[in-house]
Image (tube, rainbow, N blue to C red; front, side):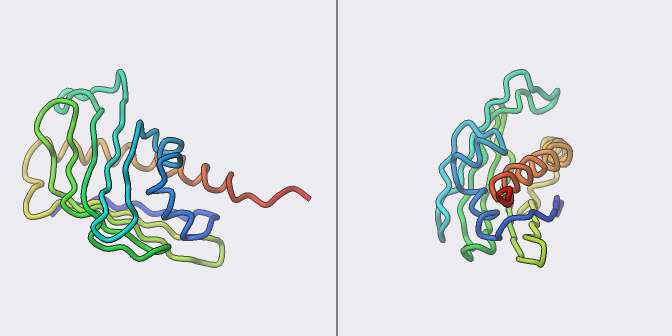
Length: 160
């Protein structure tokens, strides 16, 4: 089973960090989501659409499409697990199923955010999955950097 993991520290409360993965305005701002429908609750839907004109891969085609799944684990302010998730590219077959885990742990200087995206039941044994992972490995750190800037700007202490 192939998995991608990323983590970083964000100077914002854990519940605010987790909420940024579910709020349509936040997702549009830091992840450049065109639109989203994410219901932070057990069995809620998690769907995000991106429109990235001009961004294209030789194997996957245009890097636009929808990521969707079902929330199967939800602990408010702490974690969420989206299972049976698929990437539906603009053209070509879906990629998945996979899991997408978000964990937030409160620390002395803010929140430790951990993300993990992993294949389910042998879905990672094809070139499209491998290429999807390669693209995600390059693009996710930049998106998380945007998340950090977005949240830390919102929660920066007011000047005295």
